[in-house]
Amino acid sequence: MSGLQWKPCGADRLLHCGRRRMGHVVPDSKYAGMWRVQWSDGRRSDLTNLTRAKDALARFAESEERRERGRKSHVEALPVRRKQVPATTLPEREAA
Image 1 (cartoon, rainbow, N blue to C red):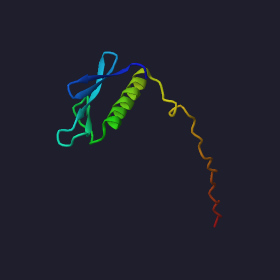
Image 2: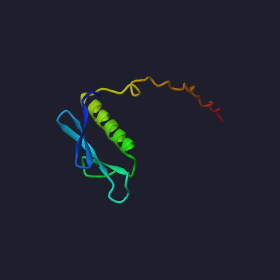
Image 3: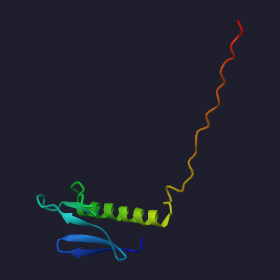
Image 4: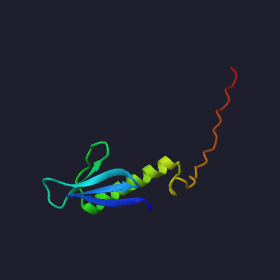
């Protein structure tokens, strides 16, 4: 996606899509070298390294942009082959 841009903000890394802030990646206060994604609703992710945290936030931003534009990803657009299940017939009852 061409509109994503990482911007440093102190120790944090902010992800912008145009003028919209998608979220940011913050260093963990207890474990050096570990990071968390700070989602726009205030929640934080589990611990991870910086590369994985940035990737998670970038993928989220891409899916949000697709959702807003009403497009599907290439995976969602693939046809699904459904298994053909033969119809079953119930045996007829004999009249008593």
